[in-house]
Every structure is written in C-alpha cells, then in structure tokens.
Length: 148
Image 1: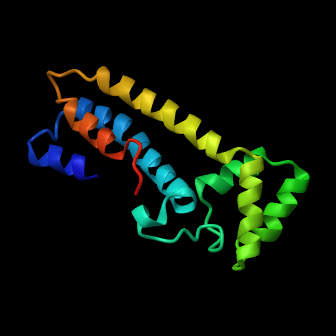
Image 2 (image 1 turned 180 degrees about the horizontal axis):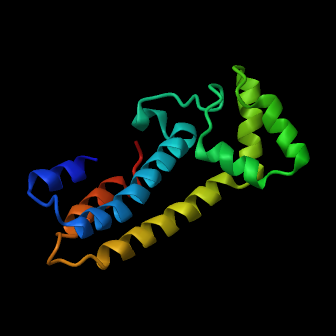
C-alpha cells in the first residue's frame, strides 16, 4: 500500500504495468514477512525480538501450526487439538516437540530460500525503464534473514 501511494503521488496513476509489477513482487514479499514473524515468534531470540512468543498459547493460526496441520497424521492431529491454544508451559512444550517431529523449522527454511530466490528472480526481470528494481531489492534485503 505505501508503494502504491508513492506511485500515485509520483504521477504514475495511469501506468497499470508499474502497479502490476509492484503487486506481483510486494504481495508475496509481505506474506514472506508475516511468515518470518510467525517463525520468530516461536524460534526467535527473545533478546533480539524483544518479545516473548505466545502464538501457541494464544491459539494463533500461524503458518507454523497450519504447516503442522498439513503434515501431521491423525494421532499428531489429536496432540495439536489437545495442546495448541492451552496456556500451560507443558502444553506449549508438547506442541514445540511435535513441531520438531514434523521438521517445521526445516519447512520454514526451505520456504524462505525458495521465496527469496523467486523474489530475486522477479526483481531481476523488472524493466528498468519503468521502475527502479532497487526499490524492491532494498525492501527484500531489509527483511532477508531478519532476526527481529
């Protein structure tokens, strides 16, 4: 949205191609940012993130739990249903152990690598006569491998 507003303010309101290019890069980049946020909520260093992750106890439908639901078998599903969203530390540990068994961290790492590669490829194909691709590269560089 901020980029769309900036484009409008720069007089690009009639250039649909620039808006399409921006959308095609920035929407998946925004999703990637949110997935990182979900990951950091659980696996981030509290000293860096400056927040204690509570997505499991708060029953948030983060990308991590969605992936766990996609990957789990029926017995693991029962564990998720029983423990996700409960306030006790023990329940949270059970869910974290299940995430470990389902290799959720590895799934995130694969997603991150693929997404960054796809975004860099999209950025490399931007027609420089229409918009400076450095705009998108700078955004991606700011969120790439972020710790907080």
